[in-house]
Image 1 (cartoon, one colour):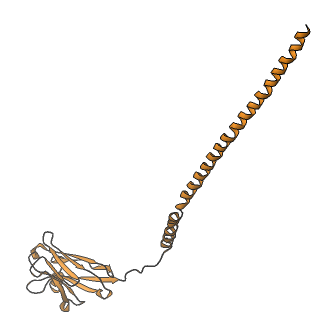
Image 2 (tube, helix red, strand yellow):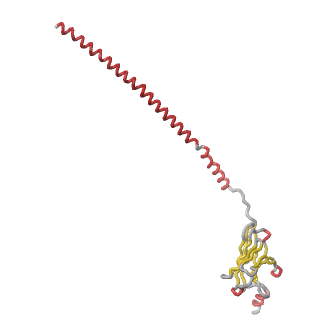
Image 3 (cartoon, one colour):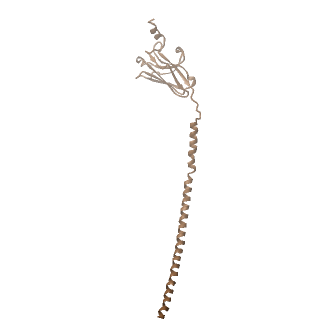
Length: 211
């Protein structure tokens, strides 16, 4: 019974000693998904690969490092960060049919150590008009209104200028008409008073002659 765990490590591809990764990851349709797997430092100089298929023995390798720290094919890329012993796989332009079981693996003599990763691609959310967008469009419609009424202050200013000009004209007319009228009235008063003074002087003369 004590020999069972070591035997299992030899039968199952990959282990916590060789390579580890997430059990499952999710992504959105037409989006980007990144998967990270960590490996033991002793596999630093070995090639790394990413394959697809529920069965490890028959999975199809999609991309591998090919002697360098980076590899890319179509929508999938793989990079080996040897400083921190991490494999990063990036899947772009995700599709619903990309949902499947994938494997992070290390190439070596004999059985390659690998770890399965369940990838699920969810449908992209559909855009539905919301009340917020309707309110925004209404607000934009009302925002245009001040531009149509920009001429109103100008018209008002013209009216005010016309009124001020009319008031000035009336003031000038009043000045030119009322001032001469007042002067004529004052002259008439003075003229009326002058004969009264003359007649008074004439009436005083007969009295002096009688004396």
